[in-house]
Length: 465
Image (cartoon, rainbow, N blue to C red; front, top):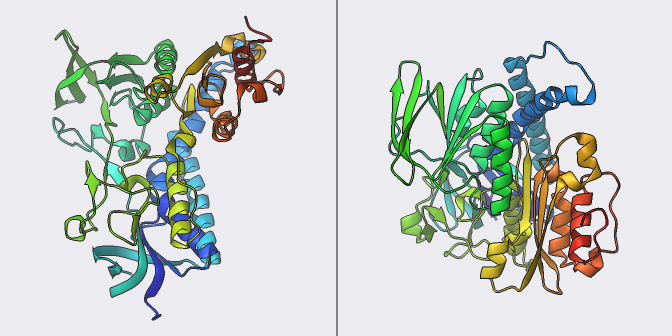
């Protein structure tokens, strides 16, 4: 094996790529990780880490705003947006340094350069290091994705933003219109509203978070309306134009009625498109779907020894999905024959106020899959902790097979993302209602939402009817 030969070459240092590299190195394989920028990918610099940092600050503002309910008087509350951004940047730097150190200690060779893949097993490297033919027995494509635009919109850095722009905005706009009511749109709507912006959110589907349980969407829309967020669902974007002091858009509903919305900023969160420019998809013969690479159960593409993980694949775009895929690909290459990934077993979540989390099947998905099911719902306002926290936004819905295991848990409310690990274990280990009904949760906590729902499902509710 020459100096430029590797067991695995990973193209792209995001969550999928670096998790594959770390696991492969842990298994004793010689690994090159090629990244043209800094390792960490969109998640660390343009996605979940900076967004969650800003939302942490936003949630603190929300908590201060509710202080009066607890007899606490707070006056003169303000924020320094530059300091908020600095706190975000400090967190990013710390995580980058930790990741860089981890890769080095595991023996992963990080090459800061661009990689071109036009034939199996051979990469052309250009950057701080240039290599005409870097050879690897296996290639893992982890080149990620980028924000997608809408054809009717003409980009203007002063008024129209994508999600990357929104994370680096120099100040909070007085008003912002958000196109897209999925996870990105919902998180940014919550963020900007917490910092005082007037927010309108537009979604073509009949409800926000259209892939979630309808009841979750209903509770979210109620909570957003209470916060003063204007919600426009089931509408079509007809026109958008830059005006002197912002952006004017026109939308229409199913009856053809039109509405004009004017705001300082327009944020487009309609999805993402795969970064495959460095991959000669056509000549390699790699199958794609809507521009994203199709990967099989082992994360291998349609070409032997070429794998794909993370946002570049036609799978849900979440960092934890990418982690699982990267580890799976590395273990497959190492010959460990890992269990097939089941995407229904991986939790999905949306930060903001309120938080949203789910794992497993929705009621509709379960029925479509042929399950005979029982469904139980519970509002958090029945919980003692809800009365203590003076927050009644929470709700849980559990889907279970009749006389069988729980197969879906759906939550909205305060701090519910910290409850989803329990739900993940419940659904993945196929725990039955009878199994779970034996265990009571800490009292008084929001975790009782799951416990009370299970007791209700078992026919022996404790604190609820």
